[in-house]
Length: 282
Image 1 (tube, rainbow, N blue to C red):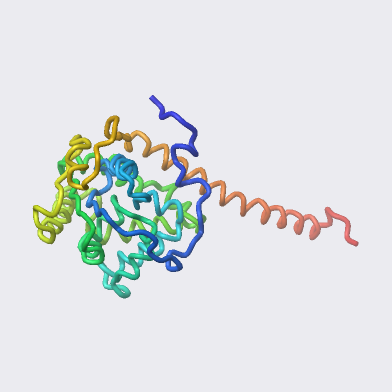
Image 2: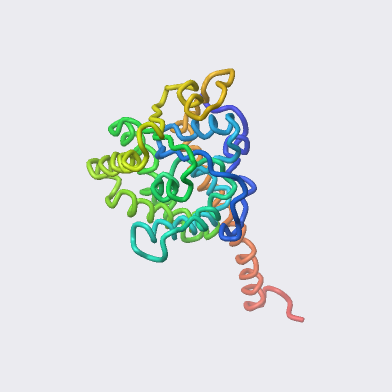
């Protein structure tokens, strides 16, 4: 069954996108919650839940889609941490990238949890881990497939505004976080488990929440000191919307490319007509 609402209502991050240099930003609100929740672990549902609990903007992969220039800075972060290129990020850098957010979840922030825990020691830490086998199956049906799509790769060379930033970011993330191809199930799942174990080693058991899909409001609200909201815990079927989001990204990229190409083609046509005598010369 298709999701309700218009495309703009369901994918607001892909409409009216900004073009702000993230390094021009500073921290506006306190960072209160850090969630190590990788993609394909119900991150959009948790994001919505944290917003309902009053944490304001919750930084998520879709946050970077709202301002594609964020991807440039995230690529710098991955290159510095995992590839030894450039200076590793400090609290000042994280405040630039995440300064409007009171919480964060999903990649890319999940890849930098040790650094974020150090930068924001007062923030509460939630470990939201899914069964590795089920997680990997979902990953390969979505993210892993996207990076192999030929159309996306071709468009990335012609669309500097979004895909020209997004695809280098995905490549830096894949090579940094996983250090192997998505088809390497053993390597990917080992890295996935290790990211969570690293956080468990840093944050004592009594200082973090181990949260699983389906746990609902009670353990989350108890840990955060919040009243339990009325109504069910949000559920957003990200897998169902993933292909539609990718299709929309492709369509918007092609529209931007054509909008640039049509005027150029028109000028070439006029110049050719003039050159070959099809237009009068004054």
